[in-house]
Amino acid sequence: MAAPPRQASSDPRMRTQVVGPTLAYIRSTGLDPTPLIERFGLPEGAEHDPEFPVALSTLQAFYEKAERFSGDRFLGVHSALHMPRGSFGLVEFICRSAPTIGEVLTRLSRYTSLLTELILITATRVPGPPGLGDEVIVEHKIPGHRLCVGRHGNEFFLTMFMRHARLFSAQPVVPRRAWLAHPEPADVSELRPILGDDLRFDAGSNGLALDARVLDLPVGSHDAALFAVLRAQAEEALARLETAGAPPGSDDLLRLVHRQIHVALPDGAPDLALVAKAMGQSARTLQRRLTEKGTSFQRELDAARRDLAQALVADARLPLGEITFRLGYAEVSAFLKAFKRWTGSTPTRFRQS
Image 1 (cartoon, rainbow, N blue to C red):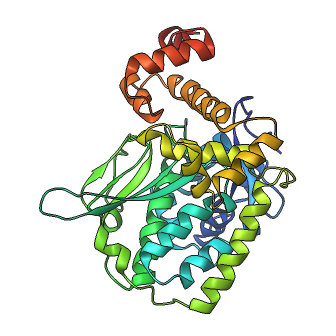
Image 2 (cartoon, rainbow, N blue to C red; image 1 turned 120 degrees about the vertical axis):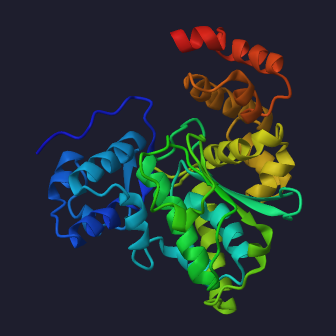
């Protein structure tokens, strides 16, 4: 059996629910995916495993190799369209039982960490273009990793989201525009019926701009009693993730704090109250828990900015102005001063090292 691709020491790991169904989809086309399983050192029975951890680089490389193996230029799209019901477990069934698409987005954003450690999903209502009314921006990203999960993983997410938005609402929802983290492929023909004609690439994240009226669309499978029960289970699961005794590979308290800081930074440096609210607890409780860990919110805010700054600066394609914005600084000079304090270097020298 071939050895799996070598991982860089800084290569983050994540839980994934998409590799198994992708292997199953490839088999459904008449191909035996065993060579892919062996090539990447995936767990025995990976084809039927609902979830297992992989390195981010392994997931990206898996999709690239799987495209060549299957000859399917839209592997992520086709895998998403054939994803079996229930593949995302508790989070999926919460969304299926939610009252509206707006509540689906709220729950998806809140419970993403129950599915995976690295990915952030946010939904924000903003003013739309003149004459078109408000819109909701749905974004899928990995802070510090501009390509996110790679072409097929990125296309998988947006296709899966649109598939469920249409299924849940029984309406032909079409985004006003869509963007993807990866460079534009030679053929986008199968993306347009799903994501619309306004497609943008090399965006550093994946996202959709939807008419805000979509938020009020009722979910046909809404079940109020089931929704309440599943929400309670999800909140219990989140609480377990936030404890110091979280299972290996899960987010601990500091990782969850950093996650919420990263989400909020483009709007400026968040305060303790904002992050605590996003985590479903009071500011006093969060501060107490941070103190118990021998740290403070300001120390973790600085650490989160530092780690994200180094990851962003390492991407030579990102201009300093964009990095400054993503880190929540009003001026480039403030970012440069902070970067010098963190690393003893300038971004230019850091990139050359």
